Image 1 (cartoon, one colour):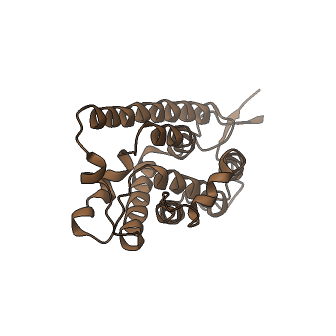
Image 2 (spheres, rainbow, N blue to C red; image 1 turned 135 degrees about the horizontal axis):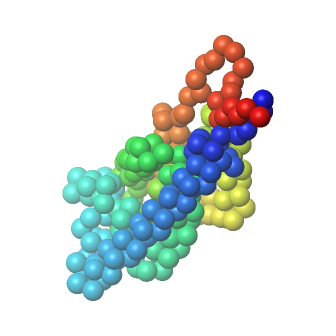
Image 3 (cartoon, rainbow, N blue to C red; image 1 turned 180 degrees about the vertical axis):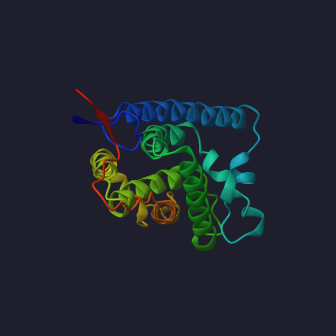
Length: 217
């Protein structure tokens, strides 16, 4: 009698279900980015001026709705290009852990990041962009690696840190053109979301054979 790793646990690294979940998440995130490009193309092509009308205008009531709309808007295609790859990469790993957790976590990040910008940003600025969400996903991966004791999530965080670690300076007020508040509060929103929606391991009395299947010779 032998025990073999289960191929049906999407949370266990190396299983078939894990790779299938990761693949589906990648396809889904790749579909999100063209949608953002379509919004930017329509905004520029028809001169809607969505940045000014739907972005976050800190400390002004008429700019509060931008909390929900600003992650879908960008200051031109260069701004969107710079956010696309990290959004796909980080979003894939966050989404692979479950669509429901992903949606609720994204909502928490948008609220914390957006409200943080609205309360602390300059009232003479208009803030748009998905970078707050990106930093939120980074916070999720880091925190999940700790609270869920998931070496996989922590390894992804380190990998992304090596690739995009230079962007972490974005949480500091180093460039007045960059909303460091959105980055900082996005990161904090990711930490909160990872704690609120963490996956709890079931308590067992005997040996833990979860993630394994029993086969007879």
